[in-house]
Image 1: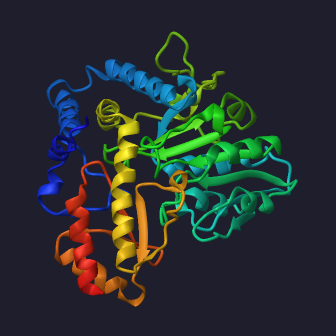
Image 2: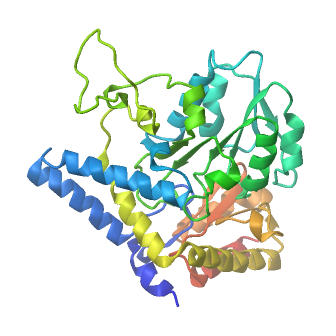
Amino acid sequence: MTNWKKIRKDFPITKKGVYFQSAAMSPIPTPVFAAIVKNYRKIHQQGDVLWTEDSKKYRKLCGDIAALINTESDNVCFVQNTSTAMSLIALSFENKIKTPYNVVSTEDEFPASTIGFEYREIPMRYVPPKNSRYPIDSILEQTDGQTAAVVTSYVQYATGFRQDLQNLGKALQERGILFIVNATQAFPFYPVDIQAMHIDALTCSLHKWGMTGHVGSIFFTTPEFRERFSAPWIGWLSLDAGKYMIHTAKNAPFSVHDSARRFEFGTQNLQTILAFQDALDYLKAIGFENIRKRILELTDYLIQGLKKQGVTIVSPTDKPEERSPLVSFSLGERNKECIKRLTKESISVSPRAGFIRVSINIFNNFVDIDKLLSVLQSVL
C-alpha cells in the first residue's frame, strides 16, 4: 500500500501552506533536490573532469525516456523548452511542404504550442471547444487536403481536458496529416505510446509533472520526420564527428547526426537534466498507476465538494479518460475575491483563462482540499 503520508514529507512546501499550482511548476521532492545539489557539487569540486561521464548518463536518460514512451533512444533529446521545439518544427516546414498549407490546433492551447507557427505566418485554424472538450470529429472537420499537421496538447492547461491521442493519431495517420503533441501537462503521470498514438513529434516541458524544475523539454521526432524535415539550424554537438569528439575542420564537409542529437546544438545544463533521472526513478518507485489512482481519488473529492456548493465546474468531469490533475472552476465576478482570500489563507491556486485552476499533486491530501472548500464556502 502506498504511504502517501511519507511521500508528503518529501515536499517541504506542504509545511508552509496548501500548494495547488503544480500545473505551473511542481515543487521538487527532497531526494531530487539532493541529486541536483550533488551534481552541482561535482562541478564545485572537480570542474569539467566528469563531463564525458555525465554525457553518457544523459544518453542513458534519453534511453529510459524512450523506453517509457515506446520508441528508440535515438529519437529523444532535450531542448530548452516547448517554444523552442515548436519553433524548430515550424521552421523545418519552410520549403519542405508544398504551399499553400495550413496547421490545425485548438483555441485553448498554451501559446508555446502555436506562436512559433504564427510567427512564421503559417495559416492556423483553431478548433473551438465544446463544453471545454475537443471531440476528435471537431478537429477533423477543420482539416482538409492542405492540412500539413495538427498540433494539440495531451492535457489542456486551462481546463485539464485530456485528449484521446490514440484515436486522434490514428485518424490523422489515415489522412496523411502530421501529429504534433505538447505533453507538458500530462507526462509522465499519463502514459505516452508513440507507436499506438501515431505521434510524429512530441515536446514536453518537465517543470510541471517532471518535478525537476526548469530542466528543459523532452523533444521526440520520428526518423521519418527528421528525414523529411532537416534541422533548420545546427551547432557543434549536432555534428557526427565519428571517432573524434569535435569537428574542428573549416570549409570541410561534415555530417549531421541522423538521430535526434541533431537538435542538441551545444552544451546543456546536464546537472539539472540528469536530476530528472532521479525524479523518474522516484515516480517509478511510487508507480504511475498508483499516482493516477491517487489523482483521480483526490480530484473526485474536490469535484464533489464543488458540486455541493453549487460552484460552476469548467473542467470536463463526466468521463475518467478525459480527466487530469487539473480542475478549473468559476465563481464568476467573485473569482478575484476568492483568489485573494485563498492567498491570505496560504492556499495557492492559479487564475487561468478567466477561471480558477486547481492542480492536484501526489503530496496533496483531503485536508488540503477541505481547506480550499472552506474558503470557497465563506466567499459564497
